[in-house]
Length: 341
Image (cartoon, rainbow, N blue to C red; front, top):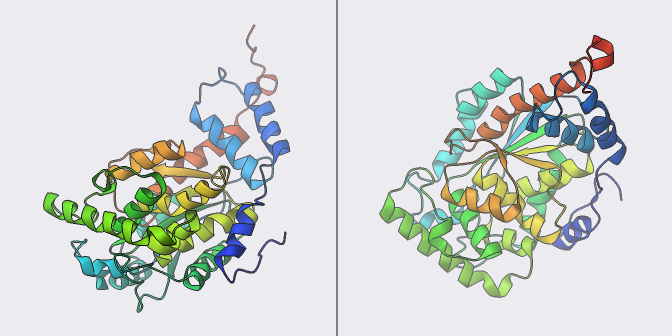
């Protein structure tokens, strides 16, 4: 399979998901062999040890590097906003994109602080997806186009990519995806999003449940879920996850929306997200439930729910620490320190 297969329809994506490249077992073994030799008690750096090995495994090289981390913030607009599910109007998506481009948002400050490159990726903001309470949010071709876009923007030179989003209404879309994939009660998946109150959350849950029921006849697998209930930015995140896998780039997902965008892939291939970590656990109530369903543990919990890849970029600090310790520490032999007796 070529690095960048052509995507014209969702069946092309299904074919790719059936044949994803696996881990680099030689790089994984090299990391595992070095770790016990470092001047510390075995396991004493906890998850940092695992992160170093994970990076080597999915960068397909040893030793791991973290000199070129990049963040991609995908922006899209949602027709379901017409149902009154957000505290903010749809035009805020475009306004926030301009804020990103002018350096004024939280993600700009965190990228600068963490030494992470930032790419803002807008997807046809002038044309929102269809209101999914009336039928599918996207056609097969529209969804495939957004996935292909996400695949293409990933740079193979990146040491890790942080994936985030901006889109008024996209927590509604994310919750609907989760309900369609995992079932349960719509209220369990619905949250405050941009700051709606309890009554608003109840209304949002009704919209989520309606959307899933209306689209059920169209849904046969995870990609159908993404097409019917997602948005262009969510489909692009799913594409970026695939593109990163093909280009040997580990992925740091952000919060609830980014994780929900990737979840349809895991429903179709249980190993599809092996090269992904979750930067933080969002305050959106559905995120903890989603992480349980995926069997993933977030790296941080800072009570954040902003999106924009902020939690993912913050977690890059942990990756840098993991690589620095794994690569830079002396071994017992080098330091002349006695090992465990």
